[in-house]
Length: 185
Ligand SMILES: [Zn+2]
Ligand SMILES: [Zn+2]
Image (cartoon, rainbow, N blue to C red; front, side):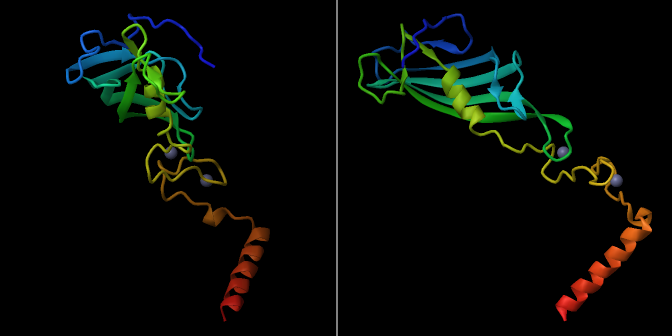
């Protein structure tokens, strides 16, 4: 299952390697700002399409191909899993990927050099998407929402309904407290 599409050298996530090709030991650095592709993320948190990805990369020619290492600095936009507030964040991800020459033997899913170009998109996706939290939080100690009225507790940490409890519930609460005390004894 090899969906072959020709790489577009003008794409910001496609890197040219011809100066490095077949010259093991040579290297070059690439610093560029690329536009984020679509769908870089998961439902709750993602890199917005078209936002800046700051790439700081080192490309080294090795016997098997070209080794790319470096970092990608991205903006993340997410929705807090506790308080449902939208938030944004900056995050830097490490990239490391070996791109094999077409004739080199490698695992089926190994990254390949095609027409002296390499496509950073899949490696970037792996680096970013696999690291994203399934339950993103606006801050580590987010207090979430009041379970009774839905108020944002971050804005009002002392928020309470203590005095407003219905009298019928008060009896139950009292019973429950007694029950706990009896169990303790
Ligand atoms: Zn939150
Ligand atoms: Zn409340």
